[in-house]
Length: 438
Image (tube, rainbow, N blue to C red; front, side, top):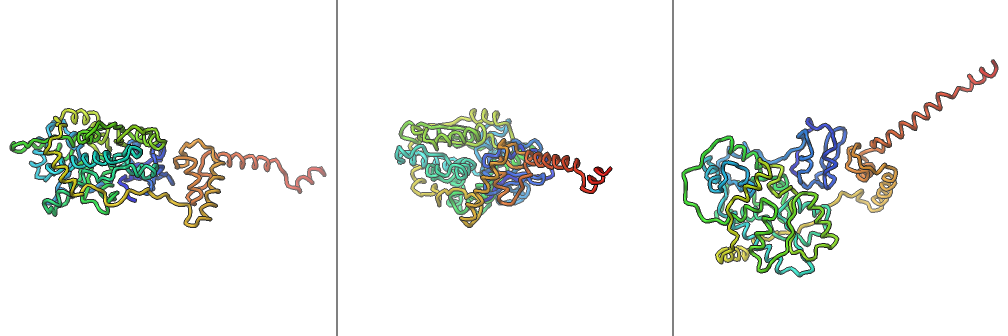
């Protein structure tokens, strides 16, 4: 399992803020240094938000190296169009990018998002009522959260590739494009989507860079729009996937009936909704859109500007939500090509076993329970683990000792101090005899 969160060990001061906020307990602090368990990390970025020392960052491809190559095509995430205060119009921004000599995908990406929305509407229409609601898979971090903590919900995740990947597939099929495709990613989860895709063997996208690096590079260039060219009529519906509720509204536009949808953003809200669904309390809902970042993808940790201002800019872009007959025909034609479906089913993320031998694993589990019962159960994090339960597991695995717990260490010191005090009052037998004789 791969992840895209990188560590700066020089900056880390072992404050344990990150281990307390990680939703999958993927972070440990050992010998004063932060470590990430790759099998558990879902790239939600919460650890980066909690770190005031910038000891955690994003590991993407190097933008400086990429732009030296003359053959590459930029694939913009919808968030990209919300990051510039002086390039408010999408056409203007695309013109600026073109003036810098960068080739950016602009035509096929809109129809890819239309196809994804249409495919999802079809999936909802053909799913039995008792198997609803379906869950969006657009947020890669949410998908990995489900794989890690809610694997029983995986059958409800729509079996549709990310529209960004669909756009890359369509581009390659139509143009036989041999140039590298580079995703402008607003978060570490979408960078990992390229490096370690779910639902398919290999991503059609070659590289992924932090969106903010490209955005700042464009702003620093001070480039002006190229000569004005005729503007083709576009709906701009896909741009609203950058904010909470945009995907759900797009799917509703392609649906034949009124859908009951639930759109949430933020890791806590996403976790709460998934727990509610797990308990069977959302039976009247048709579709759930979850984003682990606050306010949606505009709140990603690789963005260049405030999520609130970005949200305002997205709202100010003219959008045509009316689905025409030609839109439906185009979506149906692409849908029949079956280029939207995942290649393999989503599977749970494997948990690390205590042992490959069942009998030994059961013995270690019993040992873990005994160790846990002796711990204080306050989950303070001082031991470098997110909880006492995790601490007990680490001890059983041979990665720690009970004295790593500051409370158990203090108890041990107090016990030892009492023994020393008692011993200090004792006298050797030879001295006792001499004293009695005197």
